[in-house]
Figure (spheres, one colour):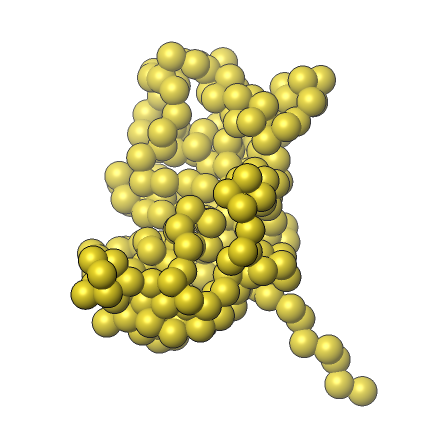
Length: 227
């Protein structure tokens, strides 16, 4: 008996996105599916469209045509309020710049994200501590973020992104400001999160890092190709 195909947790179906009245066409009729448990790397030169695709996956941007599916649900006709709810519940984001508040401790930064995600006050401290532990930075929980190293700040940013356990983690150049040691550390943590059952999508210019992913997509001239 043939097994039923597993539905992707995230998908772009025949997506086109243009800018400058159609003169710039980073994505044209692109279809991509992402499964639970995988790390998908998206590579391409600057301006190729990899960040555009990531932003549409994160419901931060909308395609001109086509459909973005999150956990099997279409999103193209949703209101911004509904899209924000999906971002808060189903998506986690890590960016090249950690974007954490240097005046707050590591734990306070993570707890603040949990507040925005709607986590009850009684659970925030424990969930923040668990996330910091998952990101290998529990020992810096009560240190001001401004006193952390670059690698530590990025791990706190990762803890903040996964604290509410989103099934989809989107990362835009998450190791772009890190040295080789910290790059490998952060990438290993992303792999751990995927193995726990989430989908991790990583936009990167680092081809060596991309090759360590489960799957690599290259974006160029509006099209997407799999390596």
